[in-house]
Length: 112
Image (tube, rainbow, N blue to C red; front, top):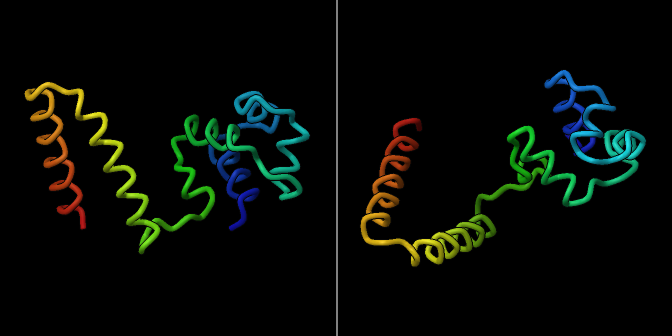
């Protein structure tokens, strides 16, 4: 499914008119119409607002597959980012984060 159709489906599934969606995304309704008909591409800001408002990953909107080598590189980047943030934590805060990751990992393994 193309990006315009995905955005249009998100709008329909959330019972939002084009006018309302345009206001949510802070764009002109005509621009939204062109996006939905694939005559224009949304900006990164529009994609971010759409993702945040409707809790949809930008990856899924763009049809990006994070599996394979590219996915591994993305994961490594995210791990580096987590490592940077964790360097500021106290030992007890870091223990909490590690425990939380263990719980999340065991939950995702149980759902497979």
